[in-house]
Image 1 (cartoon, helix red, strand yellow):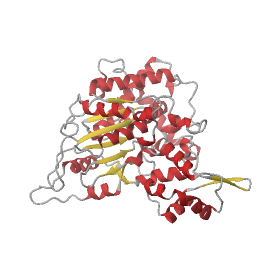
Image 2: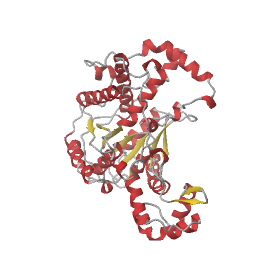
Image 3: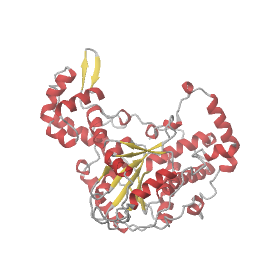
Image 4: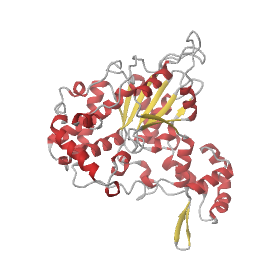
Length: 438
């Protein structure tokens, strides 16, 4: 019984089955549509901060003795867990190349609205964050040394910026490189895309298990879903697509992964108009109705965009001159206290992942990313499963596996969690948002 529980527990088990994939060079050539397509190179990008805080939360949940992380054994065990989580994801997709995108210090967006952007995120002062961040850095270095992982970060840039610029570096190039982004951050879903002609894709995998369905979502655009569902090949298999076949194999081998169609334009437009409470991004327009504060809500945003025919950022820019009249009609307020040209630009800079909106010092790092991608050489065989013990061998983290010593305490934790009613739970680990810890 304990073994069964442990196997279903992400703290101890690589619950997702891998699928074999033959190694391919970065920027491998692809043929024209209608011909047999060569296998594209696959680039896996991990939102490092997102997985770091999620791993820390899960580790703390099932090992409450870790406390403030001042004990060396807890730090070593957490390092093992963090590496295990990354490799569990790596072994699903077996990419030829993968990148760890990490936040830099002093995010540049905080200067746009000082004291507001991400201002509500507080850290536990009792935790030894310096020690935890050192573990984070060391695990990154181990993955770079042993596996050829690319570590991408620069001062003032967020991981989202790094990931967006990485996509820009490879997107639309003649040599197809497909991208899978790993993150629970909804902002990154604005980057999903599928080119029907070249069949190049960028999709997002959310590692968080959904409470009701017990599935994890793979966010894809609608035309990608159409392409993925069409499995017909001609008599001579001349139109067989190994890239599509590889994705379908992953989904077949891992029933907990659920493809979910998302509209990337809706993601960015809704955040521009309505703001984002999790990042403390304000609405594009707010006002007082008597003594009560009001703002553009999702329902009002829908009415405004439908009225003006706004479907993406391009059509939004074309209609900025009409926004005041539309807001007045929908919200029953005269917005004469705001310049919508300035306000929409502010909103775009806060939420849109487009390097043209980034500060020059951030944009300059795009060249470094490009060089990193061109020179990257994978150090592992993607046809076999990568084991945590092999990657951590010879490091101080190789003895950090606590599976055996924690079996009894984990069983007790499960019993305790099952006995507490959902209404009294302070945290729902299945729907936990790691951003609340950052």
